[in-house]
Image 1: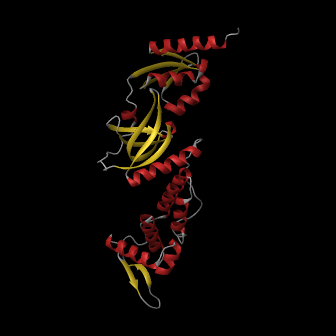
Image 2: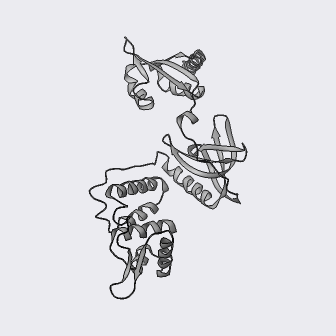
Length: 303
């Protein structure tokens, strides 16, 4: 992709005193004419690049340019490369690793020591997620309608959306787009999507807002929860809600208080603790869990 090549060329020029068009053409596997056009584009973008012909000539950034040798510190490059590695963990290819290698070339002065940050955005579902991400990325770039089957608590349905953003949040991948059925922007979880396909139908890009993914927006609360938990599940409460979500009772049990958004999700979450959790409030949640327990006992009763 052109923008990646331009970033790579700029990185090399910032790290080396001088290079040549043939060297850049070989490194990026393009023609010299393409490199010459890239240099022109960088000049148009305000980068003061100087070219010289003949023996000792080459391509360089003009002396005294403020960005020279300072725009990419060792820490900056570490962050850039960590980000590229994280994208490779879900892309299903080595595309970003190859770009990373180009950026690293000749950058020993900028990248020192061992990598100190490793980010892996993949999951147990990497085998199924990578193809979905690739299809969605293509649909976003081509401005094509995305079609898929979606499984939601209310049931399954076919959806058609105008995709705008791939989102990684709450340890999961989502696609944000304009749902043509609901006539509004929606966030769809990739693990609930099936038969994901990029259609041939294009769409005129809307002035799509960046999704507001704050906890207050997505999880507005409203359901006041109080529950008692056994001491040996403290680690889960700390992991999921933080160390200040409970107080310790005299008997050692943990009194948990929080706001919840969805009753069904709350019931499902409480049930994962088995007999180590007792809901005190709301009463309807307590009663629902009692009913589920009674039905479960019936399933496991001996004949």
